[in-house]
Length: 194
Ligand code: GRF
Image 1 (cartoon, protein in one colour):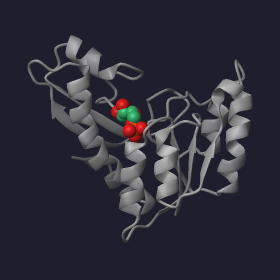
Image 2: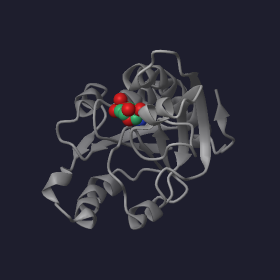
Image 3: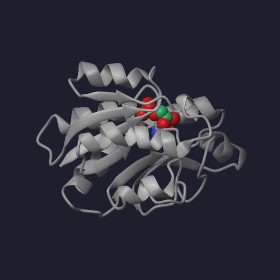
Image 4: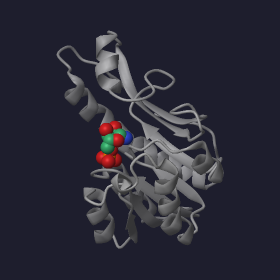
């Protein structure tokens, strides 16, 4: 299976996915693309020998469709079977999502359906939750709401702030996403529960 990974920043999840695919795996990375030409993950992808593409969303102010049309060019050229959003911080239109229906994954740093959207860790702490975590789900037109493909939990500890909790969750993201992609690429949609 051919996998394209979309990032916006450092790409630590992307790195773990690429590392896992380097071994015996039903999928291989064919492109890393970003909405941010300065995304550190682009350099890490290049170091790993993966082709990259950057389409700066700031070149398309108030023109989400225009940005996505530009992003689709390198994306479709790579002919991916699966799209993995990994720290990708742009909301995609239903039209874009439908193009990859059933084969686009995202990792979200909360125990969905709790806390879709942003600032998930601060919200969990403010709510007095005992646990937090991350979820990999299929991307559907509704934000952070598609069928769950994996979940990992961490405790929220006394004295935690958003940064300390985010760091604890990120460790689990790096375990969860590769496990989910491996299973998904083999055609198995049974959720991975770590
Ligand atoms: C992290 O906050 C992670 O929780 C979320 O996206 C952010 C950046 O991830 N998935 P990455 O290091 O770019 O993969």
